[in-house]
Image (cartoon, rainbow, N blue to C red; front, side):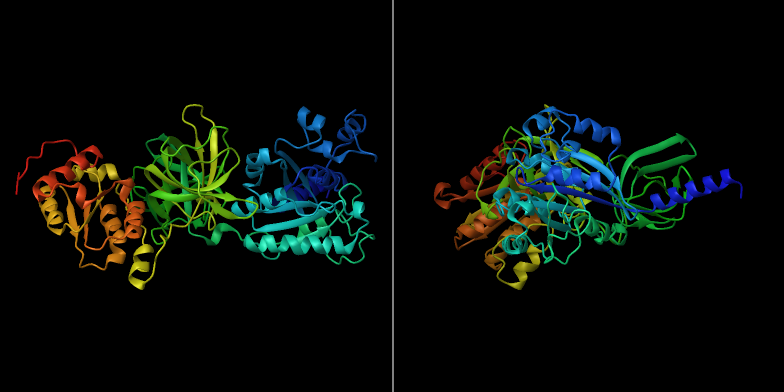
Length: 583
């Protein structure tokens, strides 16, 4: 083979091998001055991931504060304010590669006030390195960042006990930190974290094992990063294909472009289009290089269907046998990122997969104290706080719980006025209401009351009213009279009488509300816990509790009062009710 052809062949072989390398995304986290930027700079320098002109620029920089030959933190801290203050403020992304793997590093800030930046940098990571200063031990920020890493579902955690050179590489110091932090990680549900003693400044256990820690038998940091198993691919999960763009160059072609975020699709596979629920089959999978026999995560592709369906941006193609949750109501853990506090009831824009729609925070379930992991009652969230919210969207979204799938379980909230991102959220599994004390009630709690693909607007157009729950105590005749009055007005209404086991009345009324009905609950035994549970489960918060002593003694007049309350609450369109009308 001629020399030129041999060189070309070698280059092609090298490029093929480089393209086939695994990619590991990881982030660093920890308290201020734990040495995150220095550690990344040392990794880049010792793995030959820095150009000579960069090194020369840093050596000659007046900001080079290092007592050694180089201030490694300057390789990542790019902002002027970061270099002047010696801290990390923004998220810095760096790339390097070794013969075994490719890496993308997110260097995140340690200050509590930049928690939102840390959450942003860690959102796509496969692994998190949490640094702990050997002199100071486990600090609140170390716990905070470990909690955020667990919240974001990062599957692998490395605890790098840094600055071991300042404690004379003492084994007892390392063991004490490992024991304390391991307990915290176990509470977070992160077993089996890797602990590595190192000195980022002097390079001990960063690239190669150090002779100054003969008591440590584990791998160096780079060796661990090169060999740690990556999280299982999402190819074995149910297929999810959010449609990003409809390609229609002429009358003979209609394709739906997007990314396969999990699972795989092949020509001939049955698919369902959400939210319409229409079904078809995959006709072909088109790419720039031609048609494919299979598209799998995280591959971008264009899907063509056998049938002409109305599909647009924001829709999702899934397998009919493995559907995601479809609901307008869900709960999520949220990191609040705005200086303006969260306001319950204020409209926001929710960006989920490829769709954007209006959403409202209906309640703050609790705020999380990241130091103690306790759940505190709260009515709002401030900047950098983390809490659990209940949200309602303008139309149903299709999602998986974040812990089972990141791509369809995450979202952001946007301020519709300033167009700024105010929160990042991770959707939780459907909420299980408290008080499940028997099998029948537990079976009801396991149902997704809002799983219908019919929207409240569609039900209102058909029925002429919104769903609601009316809670009456000791007025059974009033319940039946009210049912008759609403029925003659054209409402879809049903009475749940006290003969039903009272402990499941809230759940039964929620099922009726999910179907668009007005549920009238009549019970002879007052129970505030059941009443409050029914209030929390009521469709769109439309819950009406009437004290029998505050209603007129006459059932006819009381029925008029209740109907007027339904009109004032927006359940019914306004009309006139006369006493005895239609009875």
